Image (cartoon, rainbow, N blue to C red; front, side, top):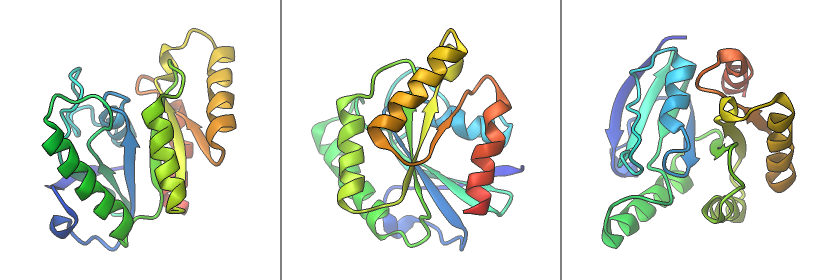
Length: 186
């Protein structure tokens, strides 16, 4: 699948119109949103990755073969920015998530190596309060030592959040087909 970066936007009024299903990525800083995009696109340099949390500061739009759009959002949780900047992000992202007509389904990424964090639960509660469609992608499954522990991590997330739960590894493409099928068939 060919993927390309289209543009960045700070707020809803700056977002381009695509007439394609759009899938925004929600997740804590450094959960692997950029790696997720790079792996699905088979291009390690498409979305910028960083070891420093909070580097994504805008809504970044990626077109996947004119079939769907992935929107990489700033991560929630740790970021070295002022409260004023965090409040502006929150206001802009809420407006985007609630009013963007092209959004087909939200995608919340959860790190398989850790228990679900408080801000992950808070995000899910916010999404549920507005009855928005959402799936969960459990990232960094390659960092878990055994297949059994991956299955346990997936079962835990499924038990806590319900709905569709997909495993994902940026180092192994074996999970990509099911995720891409979900995006293209939905």
